[in-house]
Structure formats: structure tokens, C-alpha cells
Image (tube, rainbow, N blue to C red):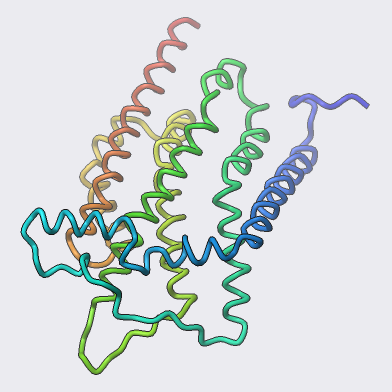
Length: 274
């Protein structure tokens, strides 16, 4: 039986098609998660516990910067963090193994998940729209992985360093739960990866007419406030960390304005030729 075209497909046919794309995307995540589960020692010893040790590259870099600026009293140059990582739950380590593998699988399989999403959407686009969006998967994946690396190497170390050295009294000793440490790393990496998708989101919102460059320029000051609030949420409450996180987000916002303007300009050119 010949495969139906996009115009011949009913609503239920579209749902069935979406179901299979979701199944394939889920299968991709499961396969990647299974590989992550096998190499759990590398993921935990190197990736998860990396930012909890003072030999992590970010701390070394910030220590050198601090010395260059003449800052002698800095936590970035300490020998070790004043905390221990413990597990308080019977199934805590097993749960950490499973859920960390799933999140790692999602990160690794993200391009494939995007590909399945694109395979479902692209048949409904015109041929010229598909041609103009040819680099979507590559750009979106690069932005996501850049955001994940930013969250892991910048947001996570700043958060752990601040919280580990925050001390109300010498009578209090820090013993961080394993799930809490993993949650900081997971939320910082994945949240940053999704935030870095802003240009892609703005591109499609502009294509369907929900966003214009004029709108983004008009509400730029409100966007600045939202960015600062977002920075305060995903970073420790010190000004330096918030600025470090806010700057790339603001740059992405400016890039998004440019992308929106290009989309609108191309649409106007097409309308003139019609």
C-alpha cells in the first residue's frame, strides 16, 4: 500500500505518525542511557564529581585570574572543599545511577530527538522553507551542547564553590547528599542547554508571526530584567556569578533580534515577488 501524502493524511494519521516519532526518540534516549549506565564509573568519578574537586579546570583558571588581580583571600585556590558527599537513602545510589543515566542519555541523544521532531514537522513545510531550514539540526544541536558545557564548566562550579564555602557557624559541618549534588549539576547543564536554544525558538516564533524584531527591541529592558532573574535562579546569589551567566544570555538575545529581523526581511522579499 502506497504511503499517504501530507495532504491525504487525516488527524488520526498525524497522531499515529507523531506516536512513531516519539517512540523512535524515546528509543534513542534509552540506547544512549544504557551506554551511560555501562560507563557509570567514568560519569560519576570524572563528570559528576569533577566540579566537587579543586583540581577542576574552572577552579584552576579562576585561581590564576584571582592571583593576577592580586586577590589573596579566594576560595578558588583552596586545596579542597569543606564538605563530604554522602548517601542517606537505602536505594539512593541505585536511583542516582538510573536517573543520571537517563539524563545523560537525553543529552547525548538530543540531536536524534531533534531529528525525529524535525521529521514530523518538515513534511508540512514548503520546499523553500525546508531548504532554508537545512542547517536547523546542526545549529540547534551546537547551541544545546554549548549551553550544556557552559552550565557544566561555568554555572556548576560557581554554584558549588559558593554554597560549599557559605558558612553560618563553625559549629556546622557540610555533608551534602548525593542526590543534591547531582541535582545542581543536572539542572545547571540542562537548563543552560535549553536557554541557549533561544535563537532557534525566536526563529520559529518569527516565522509564524508571534514575534517581531520591533517587539524584541521595544521590550529589551524587560528582557534584561527577566535575564537577571533567570541568572539569579540558576546561580548562587552573588553579583559576579550572575553577571557571568547573564552576559551570554544577553548576547543570545541580541543574536535572536538579528535572526528575527532577517526572517522578517526575507518574508517581505517573498511577498514582493508574489
